[in-house]
Length: 186
Image (tube, rainbow, N blue to C red):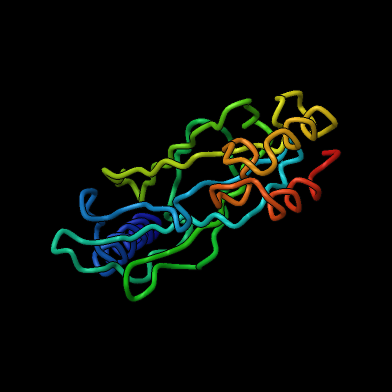
């Protein structure tokens, strides 16, 4: 009898917590990228971690849902493997929460690849996804950043070649060289 009562109490508490927080509306809630230009991956899996995913949780009446813990968000990223880690512990007053995203060695292409990010809050899959272009320091797709990649980068220097534009400025320059240099040999 005590076990049954304890089980009922746990279920009631879970339902009450969901009711207080609110159930996300899949059409009004969204997932987006703070830097929509692109991100960079490295064969070592230590690409720049400057790309943030922001998820906004909204109820059916379009009001924000505050206090949803980061552990209630699940991501489906297609196009390569990424590590997604929480930046914020829970959604804020606006129903927003941020996660950091770092691409690993699975994104190695001669041409930029694309990642598509889909989010789920609790069991609700959002009817929104975002797409981001990804460059790799391993330009020749050999599995490491070496002399061939440096040759590609050198030929792209001073141009608008996307594959070597690691800071997504529209031109390959000194900032891109600095990024490339820190990953050379990986």
